[in-house]
Length: 375
Ligand code: UFG
Image (cartoon, rainbow, N blue to C red; front, side, top):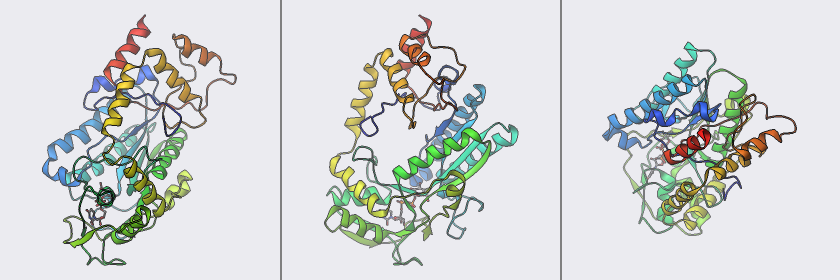
């Protein structure tokens, strides 16, 4: 709410708990953005069963529930990792996909599963967003807060810069790149988020399967990023050259033209923006977000049902939905007074096309909604 002025409804649920996600009918969900998955490459090698179960089974449960409720639009968080080790850069969506670890295989497999849904039923709209390397933060409020020692470059650099870690290890300086260090396509997380809105817009008016890269199209080396971060934080950052990390490739960057042509989206934020906002975030949250998010969950738990409805309606009155739901055109008039008043007060009828996004919810809130509806 602080960053957008909008208070989204938040439900907490596990995709492996199918009854908990069988809420489509009740909420009139029209589209789903599926971000829910384990994502650490190294951990996936240690815990393949956990990764396959959580990522694959969770997706199967979600899609079953969507199908049962006639919701057939999905935007999936895939990854540039599906381009594997053997494709030349820049990566284009039509290239063959492959993986080198269980995490990567879950992305390849889920892309296949979702594509097969469309083969069987042409009403599906499936958008596979292949993220490159999202970094940066939003207004010092939302940013990366990894558990334990960070695996990824930017949170690691940020923690060295703030003094929590002593030194960055640069994994290899003998790659065939501009300065020998690994090159990646870093994308500001806000640009990435905007790409999702465009993808949802597209899915509302199209069926089919589209894989789309979300990257800038530019490669930046580890040392280039390190120096950009030094500028952002105003002091030098301690680093040493270390051996290559197993499984790394020299260069990974997108051909970003399909997103521009198909979605009308392109990344606009620079490496400087990414480092500045990343530094702002860690400076304001040197100990991470844990306490803050716990307190906001507590607030949601305390919310009364009327407030839950008010939040939903408030969101739906905005021009642009970051997340929220509005009543489906032709849907039953809600029984709740505030909801009913709002629906009946729409001068030009309901938005067209109506948009709904699934929220994973806490059981306590679902129970209150059910109790209210039945009374
Ligand atoms: N690096 C270091 N030191 C570190 C961490 C990283 O030198 O402490 C280097 C890596 O060797 C690589 C670059 O920084 O050259 C970026 O590494 P990240 O771990 O931040 O990101 P990756 O490109 O390896 O992987 C990320 C995601 C994956 C995703 C992939 C898609 O973490 O989930 O992008 O291309 F699959």
